Length: 283
Image (tube, rainbow, N blue to C red; front, side, top):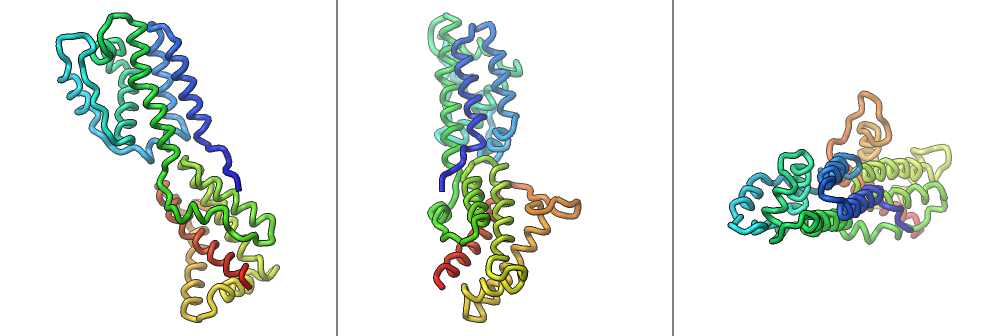
């Protein structure tokens, strides 16, 4: 199974292009490009992704400490970036937003923190190297490192084929989307996995889903007590798909509030599907 391109990749490419434009811009227009960058932080899917991975930080206090470090020389201020990548990105984003809004004048910031010398073009270039390049690089790293349990990643792509091309395609699609770090992609992955679950429930006995599910459970759990537990789990997951905004979006269904909720439900259903398919393949 090959992964689909990340839905975040176009947004990351936009950041790279904005960074390139900033490097080439004269100092008179540099702040306008930062306004464009700040706008990109508010657009989906990047906004949702940053909201899900960045912690709350006291960026104002961080900036006050930076201002207190300024000596008598131009550019002598110290930007003491946090060692933690998510905290660092949160402050870099805050800083870019502050400059874009005019709350922190760009040239004033440059002369306070970006080394000796008075050339305006050099100062703008230094801002690119000190703030923007690390910011884009760190966002790319965060995209690559959304925490997902290693066992799940090892399981993905190693399911036995079901003999049903539609079911296998749904499972592959769900796994590819789930590996995408964008919160919206995880919601889509969970929805696709629930469609696969409904398809799987019909695979053993065409036209009789109840008998079909019963046969799947018999193959997976011949021991009565565990089979009863497994059947209860199958019913619970079906109810979740019906009662929350996963397969249905009626007004009486409940929306899931956080990306972590989709993570949890995806793990839970994937574990059951994984178990049932492997049990079925052993008969």
